[in-house]
Length: 283
Ligand SMILES: [Zn+2]
Image 1 (cartoon, rainbow, N blue to C red):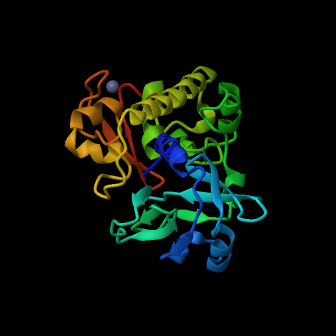
Image 2 (image 1 turned 45 degrees about the vertical axis):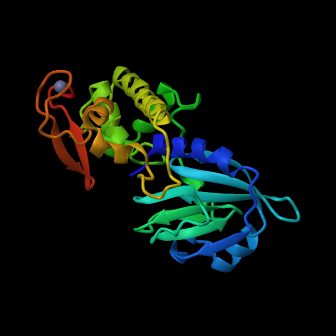
């Protein structure tokens, strides 16, 4: 499932491709992904509008368009859910089977494809209201993180997945950050010492920044319709060394810890898998 770094890379990739392009046609094949916007409103608002900007907030893509006649700003929110992909493809290529929304941009289509349809492409931007701090921005300090954690007795790993605390961190990078910080995923959020919170703050920024840097070196090839939409998740199968180098604990249960050679363990927290080293992450 795509997290902050993957969405950031996608936003950087799509921004120059989309900006300045006008939507000439709106084809919605899975109305579910528009919720809570009606199909009629979606079409009426976006037809003839021009892409002006694209940014990321948490795991969301926030497109800004200018309306056809008035030039009024239109915010359009995208989310990849579990299995979504967003890419441009030449119009002469057959559409993917699970295309949910297709914007006709002239020579190219901008396609949102999602075979489970858990993602979004909507004019409803209310989900942004509840998002927590952006971990890579300056206002995200160790002090602010500490204040947020103090109010919770949930295990720290579970708390990190709460998007109202830190926006964009998901299952992979929560496990990775806790490993780097040497903190047990089971430790209650309000039991972290100030020193641990500082380590965690640093680790969150490091794992996300490294993932963005790493992902940015991988060439994105969406247009042939064959390569994996989320770049390096797909590459993992073909280049396992590359993958292991990047993720130190995630999905490595039973393998030796890269620090101490102990066996990496998997545990289930809030119905999600957590990976950790019992020796490096004792407390
Ligand atoms: Zn270890």
